[in-house]
Amino acid sequence: MLNDTIAAISTPLGEGGIAVIRVSGEEAIPLVDRIFKSKNKLADVATHTVHYGHIIDAKTNDKIEEVLVTVMRAPRSFTMEDVVEVSCHGGIVSVKKVLDELLAQGVRLAEPGEFTKRAFLNGRIDLTQAEAVIDLIRAKSDRAFKVALKQVDGALSKRIGELRFELVELMAHIEVNIDYPEHDVEEMTSAFIREKCQKVMEQISILLHSAEQGKILREGITTAIIGRPNVGKSSLLNALAQDNRAIVTDIPGTTRDVIEEYVNVGGIPLKLLDTAGIRETSDLVEQIGVERSRSALVDADLVLFVLNQAEALTDEDIAMMEQLKDRQTIVILNKVDLTPMLDRGVISEYFSEDRIVELSLLEGKGLNDLEQAISAIFFEGKLEGGDLTYVSNVRHIHLLKEARKSLEDAQQANDIHIPIDMLQIDIRTAWEQLGEIIGDSVAESLIDQIFSQFCLGK
Ligand code: GDP
Image (cartoon, rainbow, N blue to C red; front, side):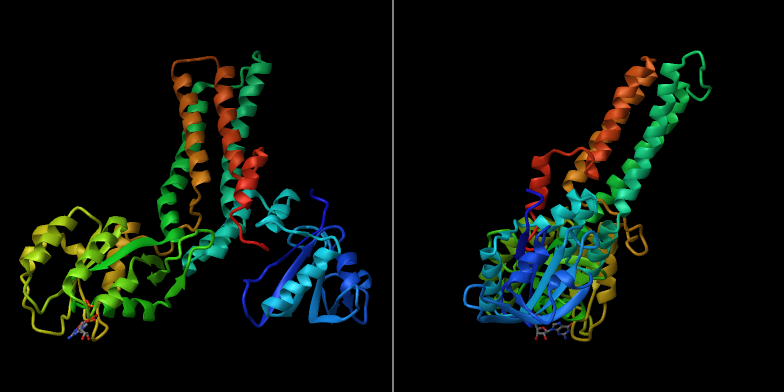
């Protein structure tokens, strides 16, 4: 299967300036050559060069598309195979025609993620790097993008590699002790095992601790903006969207057609719930707004509860605070440019000061305080300048936990002086579990599952 030549449209379908069809495999160059009319034969050109010409219908010799063709010879390509990229005009019809012509020549249509899968199987990248490619594509904020980029670069692989090296060292010591007991290697005391295991377990714990933050950076904090009509919800939405380049997107690979809106607040992506509801209900009767709020509340990890501080609190506000007091809530006192009318003391009964933020959306004041309050809740205020090696992948988290458990088992066995060749088994298991993260010894079914998450053409 690895030897055949595959092709797919690698740019999003639709109208665009250009569209790229990527072809990879042993026959990529001769197969494209059959339908490419140009001054040069691709078979003769140097690697990493671009060539102008036309894609033709092989049967009629009619020109189908005017194209630029890039040739990248193995192993210096994304897949480490011969790769040809055909850039055509961006229309759906022309791209499809070119692809059809390639398929007619015996090229197989690539499965989602198959190019990246080949890069992995051919040893160009390890599994964490391949998975990070998905994250790169889906990144919703600059920060999430940077984290993914670092992982593509191999930052996580490096950390895992270091931990595995510690364990290999430990196993080697144990091995020597088993094979040459008369040597009685001095460090080979159970204290040494304890120290090494402890060290690796601590490192694993640090990585796991980053997981929660990593998840947030990757998927965003699901956020509901609620409050009575006219308090400034849509103004808040607009301020966040304007200041932070709102990204409107639907989630690829899911069937729901709900449009979700993301905004970045100080580098933290917020996934805003029911923004359409907020915009629509501004002019509608109160009832609808309240119902909308209720349903958004169920899903939210973070609630931004907006109040107009130039109005007295209503019973409804107080009921809402009662409901929100044990949730991750930030109370926004908007319209501080107006004379205060609301009793702040009542709010303090429900929320601590660091959860109350004063804003004037009219004057654009206080948004920084809001950023800080959010950062304080989800990143203990320490987001900036942190180590960007975040573990954010469920599979990685699971394996890290398993490896830590194996080392705990080794520690316990060590404590009750079980013979060291028995400990060796647990330590080896931990080493293998860490290895699975980077794709050492993973099952084929798992590989298929991982790569099927990619979009077509990647
Ligand atoms: P929503 O119904 O909660 O979405 O509220 P809007 O965002 O539509 O705002 C209601 C009204 O309050 C609009 O006329 C805004 O211009 C006004 N408004 C919003 N924020 C402020 C503020 O900070 N100060 C003042 N004075 N007016 C504001």
